[in-house]
Image (cartoon, rainbow, N blue to C red; front, top):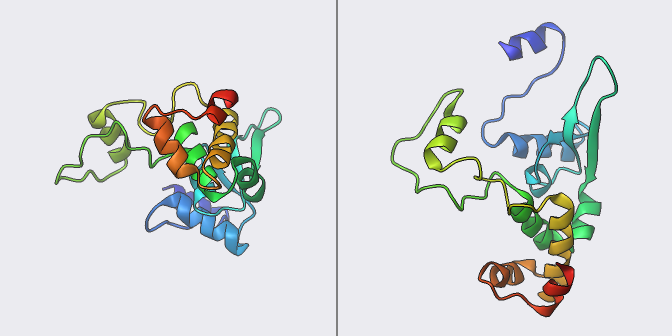
Length: 172
């Protein structure tokens, strides 16, 4: 019904065949739109050049959001690997740490994400590391990148295993 409403008022609408943020990122990267609106790092991971994080549109006052530019965020994170590490820490749809193994039944329908979340263990799914928001995640990712010689993944793996290097202790 929303697509019909948008069509009626002349607003173009695209139905993603897979991950919506991947489709939005591809549209932004191609120049078909200027921004992707999202609340996490996923659109940046898919290559969206500009993301409006926490977009709140208000008719009764000023709207608000944060502008995240891919080039700047990657630089702050210490590169592409650092961006992925920051996304893991701050929260991403691909953080599956608490989710149970997928059953042979797959959920479909408008409430399938909510049902899967309830069945899999709760509100922490995809929420990242407790108490680490985007700013702290970018700072930590930069330290991870410096520690691992421009590859934050091996340093993040050591960090998760409890092997904290001196550079990370100083960043904490």
